Image (cartoon, rainbow, N blue to C red):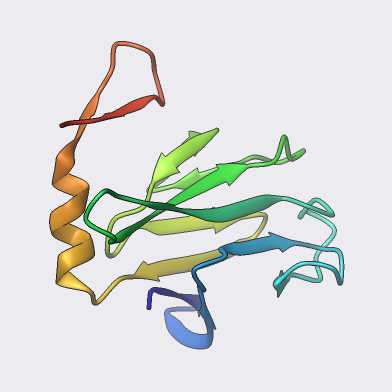
Length: 124
């Protein structure tokens, strides 16, 4: 199961597991990952899952029209297919996405980029 590791001053602190139902991130207590910081929107981002034909899961992060954006690897995103070791910045907080499941990593190769920015297409 993939997870996020919070990094602060080059020290890994909290670990948040991402379930098959995904993970909501924001300042509201209704989120799965609560970030108590005014630079973070109430409902800032969501990590969602998609099941492939072979039954494996892939994980996407989507910005929920937050005020201060969601960054992945220093790039502002609206939606992004997560890969092992991606760095996610939300407000002033940095997280590393860890996916130790090699089958999941192999499944991400089944995508190709479309000419529309941020849109990925499943290869058959």
